[in-house]
Length: 304
Length: 287
Image (cartoon, rainbow over all chains, first blue to last red; front, side, top):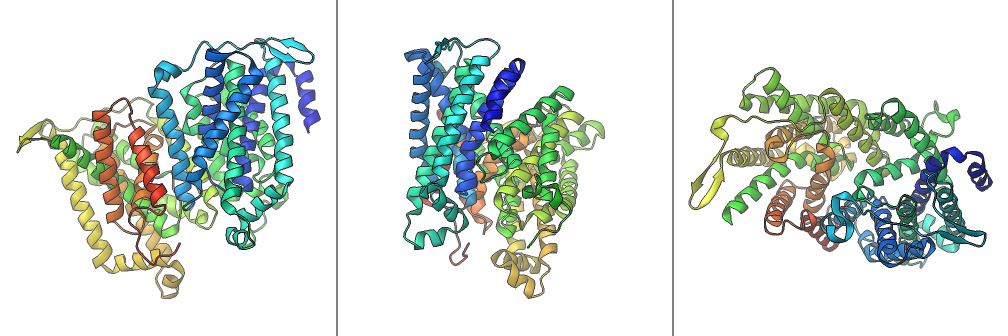
């Protein structure tokens, strides 16, 4: 799988921009998968961390120093801190309360980014971000207009994140998270701290989402309010559902399918592609999402 | 100051009317319906189109908007929503987001993305002073209509046979079913009425809130705030939450316009932190 991604860099040089978007979306979906698929927290505001990471990276590059690696580190640290801060909010209440609170956090950040326009550029977005060259053991590379360097960079971050997430998921922490998703009371009664585990995975997921956001800002040299918008959170959820939740490569497959679909449909009907997306979602949910990738089961009855 | 309070109350009443149907859906079937705003939008468009194309007077379009959306709600409930009740919350959320996307782009395609003009009759425009309070005539109408409806709803819920069936089904759908109450039909009716009320709210509020295809997304968070803060087991809970939200929003935007909706969201998060089940929870209803 990872090899296929590396091959795509060599084989498809002309589509590097699209591939770059796919890699970033896959990283974002991976981070949502950790809290949704593994820990079972329904979040409608995951774009909060995405946008926060993007603004952190863009501001750091603009005001402090333009090195991408350090900027990435700063963005990850900043979103992880935000994740730690807001993780208190997701520990209590029902699904609806969590939905509301996560939505609220994203909305607050949107308003803040909009109103502090001296720092963030407000509704015009943060412009004039110039990234420095990418320093690697193989030499220094400038971000080019075709996005090949950008794609290699995003791909590298995505692979590191995938490996890190695999470590986490197969560690005792990851296993206990899945147990917690299935039955919270039992996990608590065998003496594991539910809250500490939720906070840990939430912070980790926030860090990954921040990394995805930083990639957007660094590879496009631009950060806008749109990054905090509701449709970002909804899109990434859709990506994850297409690929399959609770499955590490789900986000990756989902991102590929989603972006290709987006590309095809919006070339055909640019303004109304949302309609087909909505139709697809409704139909998918009525059929049952776990059956999308196994056509064999499409006509079987749902086991009750 | 008092004028501001008055506007806040009108806004809150409107939010209550829009969100009350959602409270019932959520409380009765434990279904998270993010597409509720789409019904409100349909009501608003029904009113505008009836006034523009068929030249029906404004007041007559209001009950018609109610009927149109109620019928639409009933059809959607029977065909689309019912299979979703037993699914996990994640599926419900995605399903209703899908509906919202379809509704917004559908309206965009058929009618266009521009803001719809609302021509309320001249006798409802302007404002008069009553004991130093500037009273907008249209807002007064909103308060009167919403107030009457709230009282009627409360009475229907507590005094009628249908109301007691509904409350029984909310408390424990299985036992209610066992006692011979047709829970499915109770729910179909409630869903239709809830959608109809949202449609009426959308029609009434088109002048105040604006009406364009992004309406369901723009106000989704407000409806959800009303329901999650107010709780889903009573009428008075969402009512109080809606009034609080309306006043806080109007006052916040007036006194500190720089912060915008910031105040409302912060308030919501603080309240939900302190009372995760909402402000008004009936004791003994275990969920």
